[in-house]
Image (tube, rainbow, N blue to C red; front, side, top):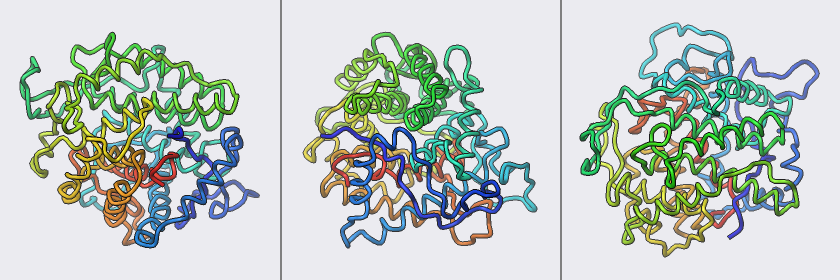
Length: 451
């Protein structure tokens, strides 16, 4: 299978441009301005042209849904741009305090604002930046979104310490219930987890994306520092968990770290094929650890990768678990597909994990599970064929239909998604909007069978 490759020069039609986001005097208006060409885009220009054609060649059965996707993404990006804080970050617990980069006090109390926790500000900042980068704005142009990206990347770089960690270390105050606590020494609920591990993974991914798209030496150095820190975080000879060199590793944190390191690996592969110098130095031993983890923790009959032990499924936030049916293993089967794809495995429709997602899909469209939808989209896109089409169409339909878009004048919510899944109380509205935008862009982000 061809390596998955980003399309940084994709031009999405702007359907809504926020007041106050216009460029400087004399610039092309934001409504018509396209992302500026970058070295990475120029290197793959022919391929970009081919993939844009494949993006528009959509079968008539799902045309209505897929033609709405770009508009939904642009609404989301406009909303994210409006609620970026002045220092360039996004605040999970305080998005409503900012409008167009300035302090904002809502005229009346917000109904169901969807606030998360400040602990995850670095993580949602990384997710939001990745959404802009995937859509083609890398901070090098004059578009209003380029300014958003520059501010966000600068914030991340300024927050990186001498070890390579982004933001402050923090522990989760929430309780998480594990369906099976046989192999945990600290009981059926977990508190005080080093949840900044997710922040680090998301921020690392964003910086890798920016470095690859721009070739900027500063971003490359920052990304490399984060890649090196990933090796410090990893348990010796194994994978990742909460904090540095954890005693207990888990599939959840490992998946997000693999999304970052796997992307860096894909960037290096693309550079080598173009006879360019790879921008990153990657510790390949980490991928051996991931392979070992998958071999030990995957159920051979279902493809489900156990959370910490074979057969164990994901934890749930106790403050939101009552709103959802008990978790099953489908999200962890999706995580396994994603990790194996990033390791270079060839995925086919007969894969047991792909069949698990196919067989359990219907029950997951009633409950909202944004992380599962995102990982499932990434994994099944690599499988391709009818399985990808049958799975992606209802997911995209559900995401687009649930976007807040009834009142364009309502700038506090219009274009965002309510954080109604099991992790919405952590990342809040910034998280739900960024991850849904990324899910909708799966088909334009990667090259593979799923087009």
